[in-house]
Length: 112
Image (cartoon, rainbow, N blue to C red; front, side):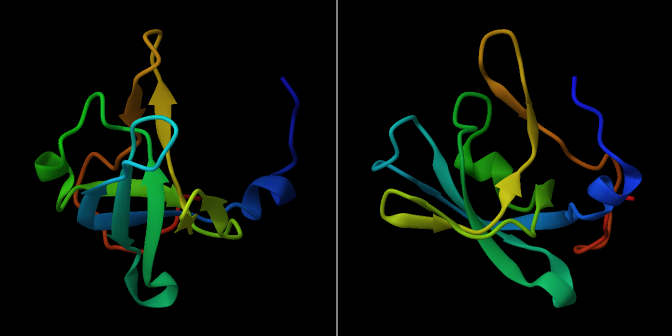
């Protein structure tokens, strides 16, 4: 495992956001959703492609708080521009479990 410095870690903006919209992403190579999340006044509304269809329905994602990396440059995924990375953990079966705060947290709160 490569070690990083504290300065390296400080460059990553990990913030809490609330999912406000979820749509299927049929053009994706692997099953995914297009999600929109509110990251608060400073960061605003951002969109992302997330391969989380195995464990989460669109309905249960609406209103769910997530953790996202919000300072990556946009990444083009087919016809869609992904503006943040939705954080999660891969299980042995390849499914992704979302990384989420365990208590209600203000949108835009930063992990530190």
